[in-house]
Amino acid sequence: MKILDTLPRTSNSALQLEYFKTFLINLLGWSVLLPTVSFFAVYRKVIDIILKTKHGERYGGLFNLNDGIFFWRDFSPPYLTTVLYIRSKTQIDLLPKVQKVIKEKIFTNPDLYPKLTGAKYSFGGYAYWLKNGRKVDTVVKTLRQPIAGKFDEKYLKQATAEILEVPLTDDNPELWNFYISKKPLENFSSDGSYCYPIVARFHHTIADATSIVALFIRLFGDSSAQNYSEELFERILKPSTIQPYHRTAIESTILFVKKCVRTICFSFDLIFFAFGRIIQNTHLRKTDQNALHGSNYSGKKITVWADENESDCLLMVKKIRERTESRFTCVVGTAISASLTEYFKRNKLSVPNSVTGVLTLLLNFPSIDPNKPVVLDNKTAGLGFDLQLHTSNNLVDTLRTITTTMNTQLKYTDAIISYVLLIYVMGCVPVKLLNNYLGYDSQSFLFTNIPGGSKIEMFDGCVLEKVVPVAPNIQGMGVSFGIISYDNKLQIGVTVDKALTSNSDEVQKIATDFFHNIRHLNAATKSEC
Image 1 (tube, rainbow, N blue to C red):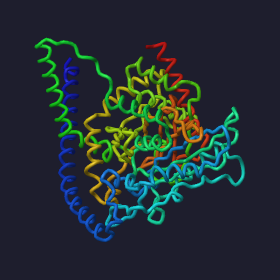
Image 2 (image 1 turned 90 degrees about the horizontal axis):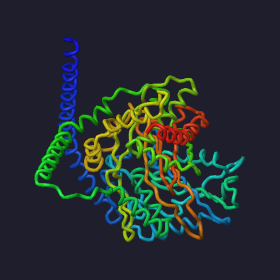
Image 3 (image 1 turned 180 degrees about the horizontal axis):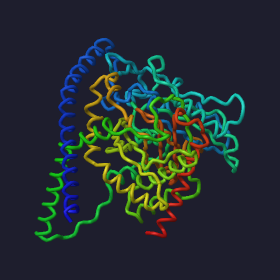
Image 4 (image 1 turned 180 degrees about the vertical axis):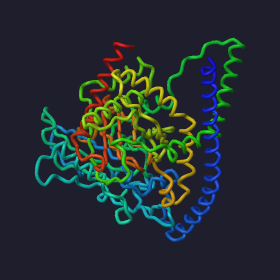
């Protein structure tokens, strides 16, 4: 009895000690960060004045605080890459059509999109741009065709990986490009139509993935696509609420007191603990030990993708979420977990209980006003979390575990602090200094989920048939998962550094198994929930 009585007290003492440690780390972190940032904010302003004096009217300005942070030097640059499948009933010359659209909507009014039309340079540790430094023919290029062999999806994936590998240097300062295929994919369509791929590559300094999707809709979509975009983002920004009913005075008072208590607790956690947890989950986190985590990456990539075709996996995810009262991210995270588990088993590798990753979160969404240019901005917060692997015999149990873990670890207060650091703080520090302190060396993978839109009708009867997200390997992570829901279908892209594996078929199996696992989870939740 005495031993049992001491267990709760020991547990409470350990919990109190952990809170105290987080509080001290939080206090120390702000004590070091705020004076440092204040100094560099003044230094940054001095650099801005020098450049303005030097370049005069050509000077476009320093990159925003939340943009310049992505100019870190790493084994591969953070390019947000999207593969667009353009379907046409007839053979077409796509290159001049895309050049015309981009010239009319971007380069005709360069002041509306200064980051897209300006040229990037560096001075004093900061990146800046000069106005009108880019031309449409340097942005829109031809996708390289195979010297021998077929121009099929297998080759397209290899070509996309090679585009990802091109480093961003002072000699090659290109922040965005469209690579257009002059030939349709071979053996792709059975209905006699032609499919022309476009590889769109945008450096993360230009915008986050959701803003780039909004830009695609504005460039290539018709009014119906834009209307769908408005409905989509408004639904995310302003979710439906339960209609209030008439409350008594006592009920209203109790509700008011509860709101006040929640607000006080939220503010207390935000001020005294959130930054400390972020430091613990990044710099002080124990390094992952598994076959998909490395330290010496090559910068060479394997890029693959898969889509659901006609299997209605997106609808299945929504049904699973409703049955289990979990989130979209938890459901697709469970499918990724099962895919990774099978990868380890197939290759006779040790299967860890969990792998750590970074989930990108959007706390603000792009402008949806069709009468204004798309605001190209970065509003992404990144939080570390543990993804439980599917080590049990029941996939539903794995979903429950992942849901509990995500709800515990992905705190809204931490996301706010991460967002504030990105928007207002870290960009003040010169990039070369940031390289020493930023990164996710302890984590194994990046996971990003992008809301898409309806099928877009384009020029001359062309249709944007499919959109494939290719998330970058960034800051110490050699594996990336990008998921998008487009035309009521899911697409997943997987990028792996070749230092981890050179077997593209195995990486492709990870992507393909993702949809098999969703179907399996859907069947399992039907019988259990």
